[in-house]
Length: 334
Image 1 (cartoon, rainbow, N blue to C red):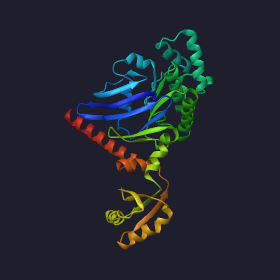
Image 2 (cartoon, rainbow, N blue to C red):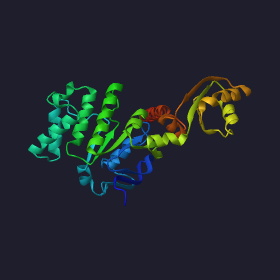
Image 3 (spheres, helix red, strand yellow):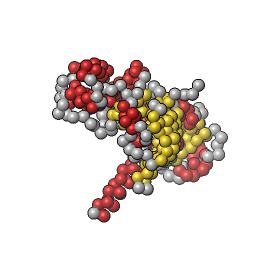
């Protein structure tokens, strides 16, 4: 029996005048799945969402949503999706109910059906008691919940959430996670989530694709991605000669993987706690001082480091530097 997919993507590419934002990516999303795109800002996550939701035309490749060719059936695709944008898109001068009313009217939902749907989505995101309060008086978390409610007003089959907890405090972020998970499990709606928060992807996603520089570098469930590293992660902070230590250790059969970044040598091995004395002794023999040792189970941070050679934080710093340099050059030309 053929798998039923909510989304199919094959070699999807977006080129902005020579800058390849999305580079021939392919993936499928099952119906009812909570699927994540994880990567730093500028990696291509939002561009991918914009192409799948018909907001942006792809340069090449193919995308299908609920059996509809995204490039040829834009209106039908839009009727099947809901979107919560990264940037706020509510009218602060209206109440929560009025925001929902206006959005429902845009979808041509009749008066009685509108009332029913507004009541349902307000209850779902627990904003019934704030329905007639001006949105300008909502907290950040309440606004995000209202945006999710708005995205659901027309009963879409697929909901896109682009960085849904960006800028929220830790406690509010966790509450939004619970709403998203509840929505996915109870309604069976397919959810595509973009995020650069490791813990968000780990907590929410059934499967996730790690995207970096416009390419998908890994795709699986969070647990299986972590299992790919195997065993424990031992991180050694070394003040100098880290390359000498790496060369000393690289032939040891009990070390599965090894990466060096920013003065830290991270390696994966089984029974890491028993290997630490041997690692320190090996460093000592070649005159390398180990300043600190950290032992933990693999995390998505370790997975990202393994596949890209850098952490997401380092990637974002690099992206910001690139953006500042591009801005500087533009200002010089004007």
